[in-house]
Amino acid sequence: MESFMDNFRERSELEREWLQELFVFVRDNLYPVLGPSTGSVSPEQLSLAMIRRVERAVGSSCARSLPLSYRLISVSELVTWQRTPCCSNLTWSTAQHREWVREAEQALPNHKALPRANLLLIGCLSDGCDPERSCDGAWRVRDATGTVHCELLSPSPLWLGLPVLFPCWNYIPQPAPGKDQEVEERGYLELVGCPLPLTSDPEMTFNPAGVNLKRSVGVREAAGLIQHRVRGLRVKVYGEVSGVYPRLNIAGKSFFCLRLREGRHTLPLLVTEPCCLWWQQCVCVGGSVCVSGLRVCALQGWSGNRVLCATSQSSLTLLPATLIQDLSDPPTLDMYTPDLDTDTVGFDPPPSDCTSTECPLPERERQGAGPDPSPSLRPRLSKTISYKGVLTSVLSAAAGLYVIDGKVGLCLAYQPLQRRGLRPGAEIELHDVHFLYRPSPHFHPSMLCVCLRSSLRVTSFSRLGSEVDRPSDAPLPSLLLERNLGVSQYLWLCHCCRALRDRLVPRWVKEECVYVVARRLLECVVTSEKGGGRGGRRDIYREMLQEPHHCPLTEVQTLFQIIFSVNMNNVIRDVILTISEIPYEVNN
Image 1: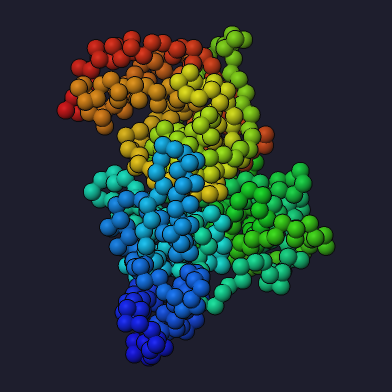
Image 2: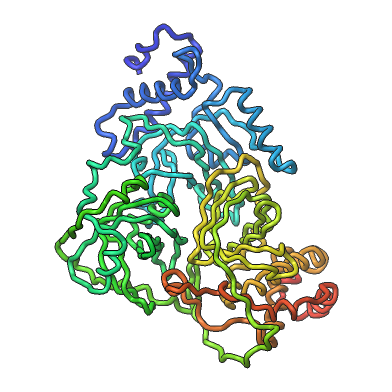
């Protein structure tokens, strides 16, 4: 430390004390987690780089000013002791913060802006691959004390593994479902600004000399290659991203799918390699990418059968949109030694006892089709659209119900519910989302519903603080999957839970038992109603990959709406009469 402090002999005593604390913090919390990409950097060099970055970020008229009011905080301290939402911005002045608060609270008058915390956060961005856990593809901020989940607006693969300073971020605590909640699950970070690397700056823009795009094929040529499987063939494909689908977990295997476009031609890419799952947050609809090391695979359980899959040798490169238009030379293909594994992706349809926590899609017996409904009760076809808006209300995050722009309902229950960043005031972008008009009399007339083919992206984090959502509606999406409910049925079920909670809690049942009552009521009605459960298994491969697209949201069943346009007072009265028949735990 002596050699480090010799660089600051002219500083004041208060500044020297702050610098000593910074050096100790960097040495103990950041230096131990550095990867090989940083080279042979010493704690002293890392601390000096940190000071230069901080002074540059502060941007004061004084070239050597230090933010003495800011305190360095470790990841474990943040998730353990920070119990309320907060924000930190190293570049703000007091006047800028006041203006920021005023703008945020004017946008949604019933909410308060995030309180400011003078905290400095440094660490390394990781891709979710840890020797102590399986790769889940979730981005995290890591230091020597622990890790915490983070959400980014436009992450770059070049940031991974580098020691960085986070100049602007929000921290949002998460509700604790139980005493066994892991430390990193207690909250998450929203990284508002780009992280500032403490070592040599990586190339933040695409370098044409770094990737040989002449050895790649476009989507149109690649679509022809999947018709024939050649063992050992590896393909490099470039194109515009037209869809980024949610990450699923089937029988313990995580994967996601993205779709590339070239003119009228589209091509799905299946990413099953654990070391590549972090790609999902890097790609967005409308962006251009080049993916190498792809192989042709036969996908079990899908009639289309063949897709391009990522391998352990695959890499992702983000491209400028103008570059793809310039690639017109005849391409060549890369040939590698065949892998020892088979070229078949064995994702069989999940069994009925699937215990996946992200997307459990249980198998059910198929029910026979009933008689054709009358013309007035035939299903209506939905339309798929793109939409941009601001989340103005969270009806139930656990049930996946939100409001956009104060007038449009949003249902996310048909995708796995991992929705960090979806808070009032956040700006979102939706693609291939189903537009439904009056699917339920209990919610907004205009509804947007996402399926496994839809793309959802947060384009701007909320500036507002929001109350932690109660997880009392958490079982509802599971019941949707178990019974394969239509959107009208699911919205009615959510309405019933809300009505039961308002009228039966706490006099008749505990709040956590409302779901049992609603489930019993739904079973009674759906069992006797021809327009009830759809029956059969939800075909996730057809939903994501098949052309033309078909999913549970393609058709809206109106018969269920008519059946359930009843007086809720009568429903509640009937439920109260049957309380004695509910299992013992409901009444205790």
